[in-house]
Structures are given as C-alpha cells and as structure tokens.
Amino acid sequence: MAATARTLARPATPKASPGSDALRRRVRWVERGAETAIMLVAITSIVSVLLILIFVGKEALPILTSAAVHREVTPLGLIVPHPGSGFVWQPVSSDPKYNILPLFAGSLKITLIALMISVPLSLLAALYVAEFAGKRTREMVKPAIELLAGIPSVVVGFFALAVMSTLVQRVFGTEHRLNALVAGIGLSFAVCPIVFSISEDALRAVPDTYRAAALALGAPRSETLLRVVVPAAAPGISAAIVLGFGRAIGETMIVVLASGNAALLDAHVGRSTRTVTATIAQELGEVVVGSPHYHVLFALGALLFVVTLLVNVVGERSIARMRARARGASR
Amino acid sequence: MTARAPKDRALHALTLSATVIILAMLGVVVLDVARGGARAMSWEFLSAYPKRGMTAGGIYPAIVGTATLTLLMTVAAIPAGVATAVYLSEYAPPRSALARVVRVCIANLAGIPSIVFGLFGLGFFVSTLGTAIDRAVFPGTVTYGQPCLVWASLTLAILTLPVVVVSTEEALQAVPREIREASLALGATHFQTVLRVVLPEARRGILTAGILAVSRGAGEVAPIMFTGAAYFLRELPTYLNDPFMNLGYHVYVLSTQSPDVERTKPLLYGTALVLLALTFLLNLVAIGVRARSRQVRMAAD
Image (cartoon, rainbow over all chains, first blue to last red; front, top):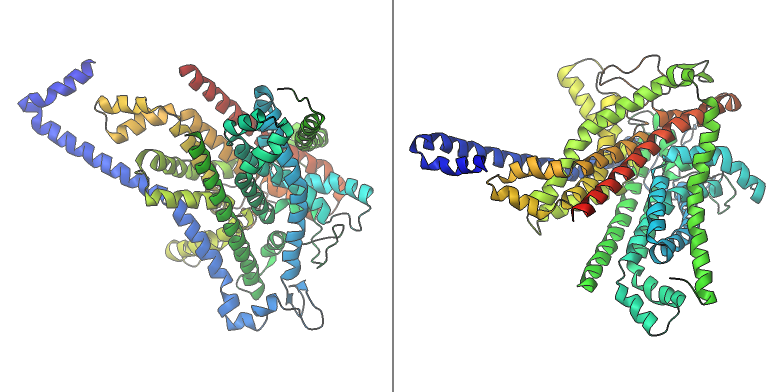
C-alpha cells in the first residue's frame, strides 16, 4: 500500500518530474521492445513450417528439373512400371529402379491394418470412458492411455520385433516372421491413444440435453448412445480417424523394425512389407548427397509431407467445427 | 447409472473390454520390457562403454548423449514455446490474423511425420546452415557442416515446439483474469504483469510443458538419425559439433545391425528399459504436476 501511495504521489513533486519522465519513457521502451520480441519469437512456428516446406522441397525438386538426375530416373519412372521388371524399388544396383508404388502400397497396407484394429477399439473405449465410466475410473484410464502414447515408438517397434512377431507367426502361420500384420498391430499401439482421446473429447462435447431428451422419450441407454450421442459426435469422431491415419502413415520406427522391409507389391498381410518412411530411414544414411537416389528419397519425404499436411488440415477443420458446435449448443 | 436392458448391458461389456484391451497394450509392453531389461541391469551396464562390437558392456555414452541432446533441445524449445504461448494468450488481439496463422502452423507442425523432420534437419541445418557457417567462419574445414549435437537438438526443438506451446497456453489461460486486472490496477504495465504475475502463476503448467517436451524428445529417433546420432563413439560429446550416441538410436541399431542377435538381446532389453523408464517417469511426473495444479485451482475457486 505504501509503495502505491508513493508512486501516486510522485508526479506531484515537481523535482521528481524529469526523472519520472525518463522512467516513463524507459518503461514504454521496455514495453514495446518486449512486445516486439515476443511477437518475433511467436513467428518461429510459421518460419519453421516454411523452412521445412522449402528445404525438403528444394532437395526433392531436381527430380523434376535436373537433367543429370533424369539420366537415372524421371518423374514418370517413379510411377510407371519398369520395362521387364515391373513395379520394382531397387535403388542400389547397376540398373537402379525407383518405382515408388510398392512403397506407398506398403504404407497404405500397414496403415489400414493399424486403423482396422485401433478405430473400433478406441471408439468403444472412448464410449466407455465418456458414457459408462465413473469419474474416478475416468481419471485413471485417461492418464494411462496418455502413458501409452508416451512410450517411444522405437520401444514399441522393438517389442513388436522381439515378442509380437513370434506370437503372430505361431497364431496365423505367416509366411515371413516380420510382416505387414506385425507392423500394423505394433502401429495400433501408437494410433489408439490419438483416436481415443479425440473421439472421447467429441463424445463429451455432445450436450447432456441430447441424452436427456432421448432417455425421456423412452429410448434405452444403448439406443440413446448409438442413435443420438454417437451421430452427434460424428464430426469429431471422423477427425479422430483422419488424424489417426496421419499418425499411422507417418510413423517410422515401429514399421522399420517390424515390417520386414521387402518392397513387394502385393496385398498379403503375412508377407514382408516396405513403407515410405522406413525406406527413407534405412537408405538416407548410406546415400551419396546430391545423387539421384538422394533426391528420390527427399521426393518421398515431400510427398509424405503433403499427404500428412492435407490430412491434418481436414482433421483440424472438423475438430474446430466440433468445438464451435459444442459451444453453440451449450449457449 | 446401471444398465438394465440386455442390450445396454452388452454395450457396457463391449466398451469395457475394448478399454481393457487398450490398457493391456500398455501393460504388456511395460511388463515385457521391464522383465527383459531387469536381467541386464547392473551398475556396469549403466556406467560402462559398449564392448566387443556392442555385444557386451554398457550404454553410458548413450545415456549421456540423450541427456545432453534433450537438455540443448529444451534450451531452445522452452523459451520459444513459452514466448509463443504468451503471445497467443496475452498479446494477440482477438481475431488476430497473425495469431490464427501461428495456431495453424503449430497444429501442422505437430502433425508432420518425424522422419520428415530428419530430412529437414539434414537439408537445412546440416547441409545449408552448417555449410554456410563453415564457409564464413571455418573456411576449408568441415566443422558445422556435418551431423552433430547442435543440429539434432535444434531439429528436435522444432519438433517439440507444439508440445510446449499447447501446454503452456493451457496453463496461461487457467490464470484467473482478476489477477491480471489487479496487477494492472496497481499500475503495473502489461509486460510487468505478464512477467511478474501471470508467468509465475502458470509456473506449474510451464514445468509440465518442459517435462512433456523432454519426454517426447528423448524418445524420438527418426529426426536425429541423419542429423547427429552415431552408431558407436569412444568419447562423450564435448562440443556442439560433436556427434553423440542416443538411447533410442542404440535400440534401433542393436535391433537391426547386430552381428549376433541372441548375444545382444539382453543389452537391447536393458537399453529399451532405460529409455522407457526415463520417458515413463517424466510422463508420470507431468501427469502428477498437472493433477496437483488442478486441485490447487479447484481449492482456490
């Protein structure tokens, strides 16, 4: 209080006036400086996204523009089957072949397996936690699932390699010990937490009046949930699935360890599979900087970046819509 | 609420079992790694260098390398993340276009695959920035134009930036408006209020943000594979331009390139356990801190 009083009194004493003017000027200078500095640092995220775009794109661009690269691989050659050998990814050989379709097919195959496991499981679990579980159960389950999300993917990959692969081969009699199924199951460990937490949010954002209205009309609880609550949460749930897809297609360490990494173009879940991410992880370390192979790997990264960016924009949009709707309904 | 109709009971049981399965995923990984890793655990394992082509010895340099890497990452990520969150929550005018773009970028940054960060780190930090530094400051040498500690840390710092921003912003928004108004009413400026009132009030949340970022950064492998992590080193990193060993990368290397799989398996389990324990404990602490600050807040209301 005394300090406040003194500050208030200060301008009244004429002697202090020039000093306090200087003080006020310094304060204003500090204020402006701080605000500018904070704003500049806040731009880091924008700069980072742009730099990623520019520098991954820059190293991928020679695929389209460089004549030296075109002697070994053309943009069309990435997609069109190689005469004689077909859809083959074989970058290290006397006649290197760079068909990227087996890699994208592999990524898609493993991602679909992971989603087929994790979407039903996570949606049902979200339904349990949001609708059936008591407050104390919820407060135990949610952090536990956060912990699952926090397990480093290299540890999950190692577990899939060391333990799950043997188990899967014994149960399903798969052709290769490391295959798309093992990688897909491993991947679902990373995807479940994402799909769970977003769809649980979506379910909890459905206003209680919906539930009350359905129950008041005499609908049983299961009917209320499946016919009223889940459809009302549909935008959020679809965002959860979309973002789960983005996480799965971009995951590296689980698939590089568990999938077997043979670039085969087929639909067998029990056979060794190579993904886009695992290809970059395994080959970039050994490639000559500036070689056609190097630029192809960056092109793979750039494609992956574009795919995940689109997926995220779609996902974030429906989340924003879900939040806006929940806010509107609660008003 | 108890389920009465058989259909209600069936749905209840189905959803409950799905929850149990997901929790079991957590359980099996943790228990298997803990059981396999406990056998390898010894003082020597934690304090010695790898021996005999990494089929024996310990993981000391990988532990030190991971700690150094995440420490440097934090030094870059925390100030940048906290400042971004302060801008978004305290400075940006409502409906600010800049704030919206920053938010979109943060969300997208969080969704970029970690391997793309690896490509970016190599293409930007190592090949472009590092080479430019060499040309300007250390002509004729390869000093910073190579994969090393500082580039890997900065790559990880960008990757963990969204984690820091999101949890810090959450903490800042939880600070009651009355406290800000009280400070301003006493004649404090906006910046003084942020620095002396709002940030101290949100310190638990900022701590949580830091812990979560460290836990995330310590477990990432893909971004550091090409930006500085090394297979095996005889010395600990001393300078910013030294390569380093890393726990997660060590797990990857031992699982894929070991000459003798059965002999390295105990070491592999041991390394996985140390990494898992590290990230797990950090996450547990973060969850604890967050729960406590929620309690404090509720008590204050």
